Length: 303
Image (cartoon, rainbow, N blue to C red; front, side, top):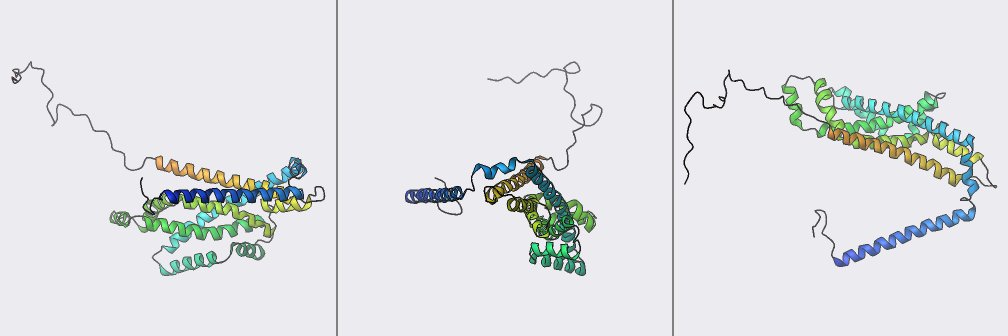
């Protein structure tokens, strides 16, 4: 039996107790699911008619347009947050105090303000007629500040010797940051960067507050304007739209995993050139003799 470095391996009694807890917890969770299904079924939320509305061409078209609008806002916000994150991390690591203070103040300010307030303020103050750009800009500001801190952690994690070696070679600070520090920081922090992009994708749902027709806003309109048997299909709409969100986040996570694995398999370092063939005209070991130019040497006798 191998013991973990964090805790001792459980004994026979602890193993039995943990199994009992697992069984009891699973049964309690299953009971909650059953109670929820029974109550929803009693209210008619699980009737076939509640789910049949998604076979209508109009509703499918609305959902497809909402997915496209969500991906547009996410694409703009993802690019904007990464670009802003790089700019802010360079400013925060600058040797010039005014630049460093401005970047630090910007990061701390917008990390402290709730994202919903930032989006609403950008929409009301600057882009009242362009809800998509207001949503993308608000997401870029907040997530750019988060990405800047992620990249700063990655830069600080690079061994100091690499930076000193680069300066010893005569490289400027910009060259050191672009060629040595930033590539290693991005590679080391790639899982965290992608995780924050997943958060950015989910935060596009805040666009409903500025009436941007993304998935959540479309789901609210579908559920509140479509009546089935005297009821509104909130449950079925939430399940369908939630499944779409989960699918998009899983695809983005799978893309991140693929990029990370591909980066690990990539060949790095300096390739070693093949050795030049040794010529008989130059220095080096002499070629083996065939016995024609000299006496043969008899092998030593063995007993």
